[in-house]
Structure formats: C-alpha cells, structure tokens
Amino acid sequence: MATVSSEELAAAAGVNSAKLRKDLSHLGSYGTRGVGYEVEYLVYQISRALGLTQDWVVAIIGVGNLGRALSGYGGFASRGFRVAALLDADPGVVGARLSGLTVEHIDKLETVVKDREVSIAVIATPASAAQAVCDRLVDAGVTSILNFAPVVLSVPETVDVRKVDLSIELQILAFHEQRKAAGNGKYDDYDEYEGKYRSLRAGDPPDSAPYIQAVDA
Amino acid sequence: MATVSSEELAAAAGVNSAKLRKDLSHLGSYGTRGVGYEVEYLVYQISRALGLTQDWVVAIIGVGNLGRALSGYGGFASRGFRVAALLDADPGVVGARLSGLTVEHIDKLETVVKDREVSIAVIATPASAAQAVCDRLVDAGVTSILNFAPVVLSVPETVDVRKVDLSIELQILAFHEQRKAAGNGKYDDYDEYEGKYRSLRAGDPPDSAPYIQAVDA
DNA sequence: CCGACTTTGTGCGTGCGTTCACAAAGGCTT
DNA sequence: AAGCCTTTGTGAACGCACGCACAAAGTCGG
Image 1: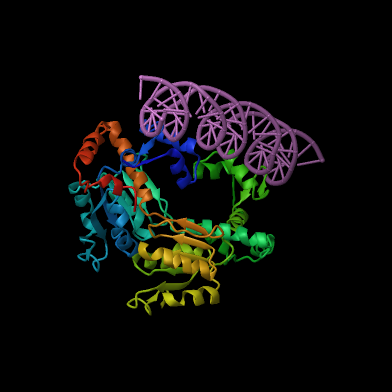
Image 2 (image 1 turned 120 degrees about the horizontal axis):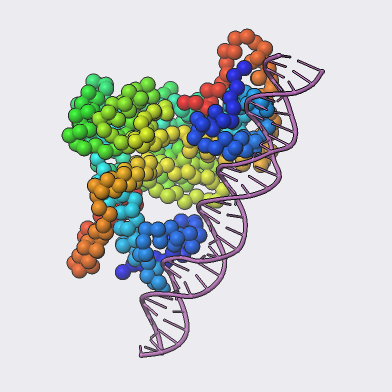
C-alpha cells in the first residue's frame, strides 16, 4: 500500500506542507496520522472533488487548426471529457473524419446539443463568428462555454464562460525576459512616449497608433 | 482627447476602483485629478510596462495542428511577437509554407536560434519529444520557453518555463457545472470509493485503476 | 502490551493585499 | 479670478490566507 506524506507532496509541489494539509482537510480527513496519505485513495478523492470521476459531454465548434488540435488532445479523454460532436460552417470540412468523429454542419447545433446532452461547448471559431455561435449554444441550453476566440462573449449570468488567450502566457514570459534584460542594463527604461505622443496630437490625421492595437485582440 | 476614470475602468474589469488606481500608481502617476486617465497615454504606459512595445522573436517547434494554429494566431503579431521560425522533425511537413514562413527541419534549431536571435521558444511537439527539444533550446541559449506538451520540463534555474494545459480550463468549467448540479440534487455527493477500493485490494491483479489515470496526462 | 516515534489536523498569530476614506490637485463654470 | 466639483493618489483599517507550532492519533518495534 503506497503512501505519501504531506511533506513529500509539499516539496514536490513547491508549497508549504501545512497549507497542503489544510487544503486536503477541506475535502475530508483522508490521511492516517503517523503514516501519511494512501496514494490511490487520495487520488480518487481529489479526482472526485474536482469532478474528474464524472463524464462530461463536450462539443467543439469550429474545426480549424485549433479545433483539430483540441479534438485530438489526449488530455481530454483521460480527464473524463468525451468529445461528442465537431461542428463547422465550412462545407469543405463538413463530412471529414477526425479522431473518430465526423464533422457536422453548424446547422445541427441545436439538435446535437439536445440529443447528445452536451453540457460543455468549446468555441474555436474565428472571432467574427464566436458571439453568434455562443448565442445559439446558450439558447440550446448549454451553461458552460470555453472560448478560444479572441472576443469577450456576452452571456446571461446563468452561463459560465472561460476565455483562453493563447498569447497571455507568452506575454508573461516576455515580461520576465524584459526584467532580466533590464537588470543587465541592456535596455534603458526611459519613457519614449513623449515624442510619439506630441507628434500624434500635432499631426491632424493620427493614422498610426500602434500602441493602441497592442492591448486589444 | 478621450479620457477614462478609474471608476469606469474598474466597473469594466469587475474590480475595486481603489485597487485599480493603486495598481496604476505602481507604473507612475499618469492620471489627471478631476479628469481621469487619457486613454492613449495610459494604454501606451501599460503596454510599455508589460513589454508590449518591444519586439520579441519567437520560434515554434512542432508544426502539428497546434503549431499551425499558433503560427496563424493573430494575437501574436499585434502584441509584438514575431514568429521567426517554424521547426519540425517530420520530413513530410518540412518545406511547407505557413503564414508566410517555410517550415524548417529541427536539425537547424541551433543555427536558427543564434542567427535570428530567438528569445522565446514555443514547444508544440508531442510529449515524447518535448524534453529533448527543450534541452537543445536551452543549450542554444533560449531562456524563456512556453510549453504546450503535457510534460513537466526540467530546466536550469536560469530558464523560465510556462506550461499551458489546454484542459485545465475545461476542468474548471466541469467543476462549476458539478456544483450547479449538486445544488439541484441531481447528483448525490456520496462517496462511492469504498466499493471500488475494496475490490481493488481483494482482486490480486489490479488491472483497472481509472481514477489514477484521471490526474496525470 | 506499552512506549516511542511519526505524521496528521488545526487553533492561533502574523503579514500582505484589498478596501475605505480623505486630502491634494486640477479643470470648469460663472 | 475664485470657488466648486470631480477624480486621483495614498495613508490607515480591515480581513483573509498563509505558516507556525502543537496536541491528537495511529503505527511500529521491543
């Protein structure tokens, strides 16, 4: 019977062991004093608390590169996510076979959601189509949406939306890289805005404002 | 001259306005009392603080579906990330044109990193290849790595690695969905482990332990 | 069967981040 | 030009989460 102590787990995770024990205690009292936690049992309890022991029916809307990557992602199946439908508007991809599924036309969205009891939808469409798809999903009764399109979706309060921005992590890396470089004195941290700013206000047609585009999608 | 108040920004972001002001004050004193913040100037200052005004040279390793999706992702270019190389080990894709770039063979990794001054690398290879690719990147001098492969990479302390797990957001949605359902009394929150557990210990060949697989990749 | 040892579970103190609240500051109106 | 109004920037209070430290509990060796 393999066991593990809170000390070992904490070291592996890089956190304080007291905090780890307190966190685990929120799930229940699954440890044995003087011994530790039985690995299998603990894994099961955590999985259950996280909802990993249930099966979730997922539909992926938009079968571009990202949709294809997601449909083939092994991490889904092993965590209890069953991709039950791939939908797209492009007649060119409808009918294609992918990871054991046939791509269906977006027109079937409502039918598919209801018949297969889809509980979570993944939007991997172009930004321009995302809100319309989202509205149809909500009308069809989907209450959890994972959005990869670079737009903020508006939904009723009863619907959960999570947005994944693939470039945010890249920005965080760049931020740290910048700090490293600053330490080296490689780049000066001077404010170069004044020049641009003044020229922007002076010239009547402000045709270039690259720093504005930098923060939105 | 368009301006915005901390109150408006805070409402839009769903945070407290005092916190927003304090956060902005860490970048400097860019507001005007009685008026608010000039939008353009503030955007520029935030962009600069985040490192978005610099250009970052990025290489994408692994041109499967995910690599293709990333190479075509519009959010990169607009945030100052310039994809300068696409590398893959598969002779079938080497030579292909993608988003204005030609896919090159992974053998050129060291040359490409040095000649084009790559500062951030994105690993979108299968899990089995990720660590080897990572080691070569580190040897070539890359100090920031964004990892999409479902493995924990080991690197020297001087290298920053960020791991993106595409299913984590899905898990969070499932977690909340579970809580909603629990509220309805749709699923009972009983502990169904005991049965499985006992049968596992009783039967000598523990050939099925689905809940163990649930937490690793 | 008992005592020593190990490790959990948790009450309590501390420190940090968030929020409140207000003085300082700048613009706008009369 | 002067006073009013708006909004920033920040000192001070609050609250929560983290970490310490220890009693409770259970195991293992003798």
